Image (cartoon, rainbow, N blue to C red; front, top):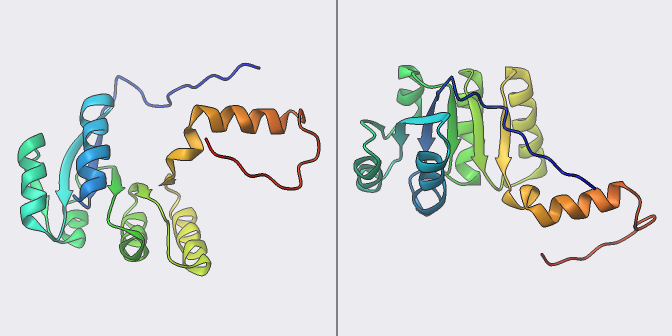
Length: 166
């Protein structure tokens, strides 16, 4: 079995990215990874209702454009994609706003509080024709990919129930 992973980003083109929500997930996980590990992305703006939190993150990463209102960030519009780390309640308002503005979206899990809300967000993003992903890191864990490949290959037969810890 061979698994290969290939980036669809181009090193010749840098994508301007906005980050909404400057709490612990953004501060300890997303910002370090994006700022230091993805040269094809450039963080150009931050948005958070908590100005002190946002300013601390903005100062650390030298990001000048800062907003306390997502609509104002969208109106300025000098970015192609957004990383939303504001929680599932905020996702229900923010995802449609950014999708309708034509911004590609990566939003932290969970997508929404209810299945109906999740389906609505799926439909809104599909209708907008943007790239939309919910950040569920377990989907890309190597062990999970191997397990999926083993299941897809039929090596375990017809699975009727599964419990795992990885």
